[in-house]
Length: 408
Image 1 (cartoon, helix red, strand yellow):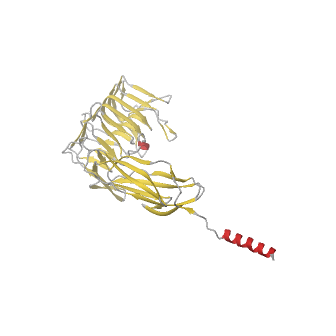
Image 2 (spheres, helix red, strand yellow):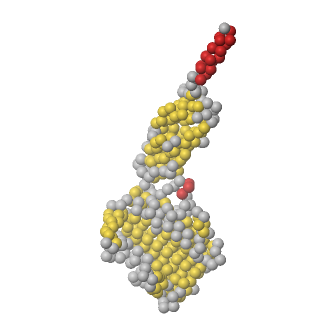
């Protein structure tokens, strides 16, 4: 009888243990975080940010359930994704013992009447039982002038008709530094129009965007840009992503393209960076100077710093550096005069080493049909200039004997 009683007690004990549920601590568990503040660099109104990550750790020896809520008080619109589940409110999120989850965050800022940068702050609230913890969210915002497509043109490509959308610039008012200018797509300066950009103005380009001086869809050539920066108050051109990761990233926008027939363009004290081609100066139809450029920095172009094609460029005191192909390409002949300029190229981005010389000079081009067409290099003068880089040869002269090739 004593044996049966003992056996019964053992069975009851085993059954009671097997029916016991795993406990979720909701009152005493404390969470740990990869940071106490998520900060977004300056973001233009209506343009979204990069994605940032917050890691939430449960360093306890027991599982935890917590409620996660994004509290919005400002004009910023934060978006949250918790371990792959989007939404700004998540209840009963389980974090296993000695485990973690990821929270992904983005922000878009509503427009503001304030012309100067401003700060917006929200927070993520973690409620675990009676314990509440929070992570600060901070975003710097700024309003801007936005130039988006408002005009279209038809392009015939074989049997296809393509529609090209662009922004038609109103050049009646100069651009001033009261607010940045943000360009989506291509902004076009019409023939007979002159766009003036004054000192201290900041221009930002969305991906695959640029400025076209002269309307390629018009029968009339022309259009002019005048950039009047000053020392320590330059006019800047760069991509529209201001997060630190994009600070020196090439290829964020396309180019400033001065089209055939445009004359008397001027650039003084500008900083042009992080695009595909800094300035593309196309063929001229007369002897007027196409571009005069002084005291300007062009850097971090995925392709070329200055590309001239059978044109007339005068440059003084320029620094052109770190371009994927050439810092300067004087192509298809023309007239070029550079004084006190530095062309230096140590391009090495994304593991792709440059194989082309820093400076390229030629007087011909090869058409799609394979035919070679030569054009006179009337004059190329480099005075007191530095050409340098990490290749053994940093200047290349490509001459076709059927056209003039004059350089000094």
